[in-house]
Amino acid sequence: MQINGEFKPLIVAFCCNWCSYAGADLAGNNRLAYPENVKIIKVPCSCRVNPMFILRAFQRGADGVIICGCHPGDCHYTSGNYYTRRRMSLLFSMLNFLGIEKERTRVEWVSAAEGAKFAATMNEFTEAVAALGENKRLEDLRCKR
Amino acid sequence: MQKINSTMLIEKAAQLLENGTADRVLGWKKGEFDYDITPAVFNSVDQIKKEFVFGDFCGANLSKYLVKETRKGDGKVAVFLKPCDTYSFNQLLTEKRFDREKVYAVGISCEGMADIFKVKQIAGDGIVSVSSDGENVKVETLYDGEKTIKLSDVIAERCINCKSRKCVAYDELMGEEGEIIDSDRFDMVSKIESMSEDERFGFWQNELSKCIRCNACRNVCPACTCEKCVFDNPDSCAQNKAPADSFEEKMFHIIRAFHVAGRCTDCGECSRVCPQNIPLHLLNRKFIKDIDTFYGEYQAGAQVGSRAPLVDYTEGDIEPGEAVMKGESENA
Image 1 (cartoon, one colour):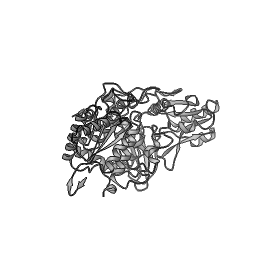
Image 2 (cartoon, chains in turn purple, orange; image 1 turned 135 degrees about the vertical axis):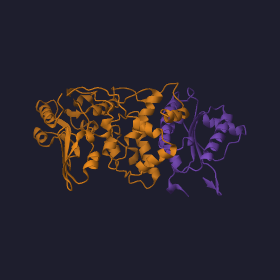
Image 3 (cartoon, chains in turn blue, green; image 1 turned 120 degrees about the vertical axis):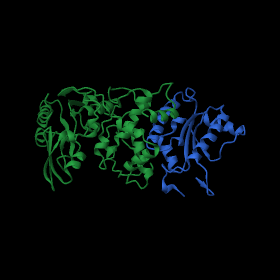
Image 4 (cartoon, chains in turn red, brown; image 1 turned 30 degrees about the vertical axis):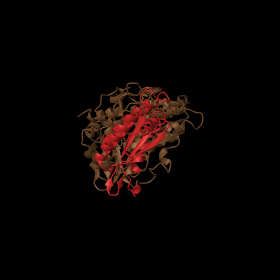
């Protein structure tokens, strides 16, 4: 995303309601800074994230998409994030196969107690995406302003 | 062993109707041209004798037609299944898409089907008639007259890399049962994986931009049997018309392949029907290859009732970050 002629990566973070969203909250409570261009979307569980959501985020101008969920084994619904893990392994491997930069997608497990990890992950991910530049390979020109 | 031919199948189909085993037969009949053979339902012996055909262009997988055909009436449907079709048949049974009791399956051995794109490449356009005797293909074209091509030169890509000649499901078998083949079907996937990121992007951009969104790949796929498809939803962001933006074609093909991941039997129908000749089966094979490397070998449709990898998990599964690296470097 270009803001005043300067490139700022737009990051979409899908966070699960029970761990990662609470983790983000904790980061805020602890006054830990993470980039303002990370847009959090709360989902009931990380396995709610459909591959279509990820592609759609890229279509609408995201430069990077990160999915955060409870640590494997800690899912509020017992097994949701195990399915996420398999799905995203295959999807991201496929995106890489199609030549879409693998640094643009990530899955990270963040628990409700890991506010510091949430902030650090977002800082690091934003930096990595910023280094790649704008998302050109999965963009939709009709969605550009 | 004699190769299965049209006469044998016509005889068998007529016999199944006459002795009451089935009250209709799913088979193939000639379409507009000699080479475009279409699946058809036969209700009478007369019709079978008149229209039933079987030959080297009968690539069509009949298993998907059972989903709708078995819902019509109570009688049994007889169906002819090539080895790769029997895998789709099992997969559909696993997903409970039709009633096994209503089907009489005849497995037929197969030595590979011809690809009309390859014939056209050699013989040129304007094909008036094609016939094959099992070794040579005789082609008559408008401009060049008659030509004879070796059948082995025009065998479809999916048949060259055939994974199995074994019929895994049948009530009755014609010809040999066949064996599972140790094929090189992942070679092309590995080749693309070993390209650089830019080359991969270029390769797929080039291929996928040919897509005209005719939906043939979706309609023919035996794994795509949803009553309502996400792509028929006008809000799905991949509209039902020729892609207006390069994003749409990527979206469509990624999602199409993802929806059948773990359920795709690698029958290669998607690539066979593609009017633009896009190697769509490579996307499916990438998923199959990844599933094999990440979660252990799995062949969809090998057994009825097996659990597809995407609706299963183990505690020690590979993490997505590692998976992407592994999917790339497996053959580096």
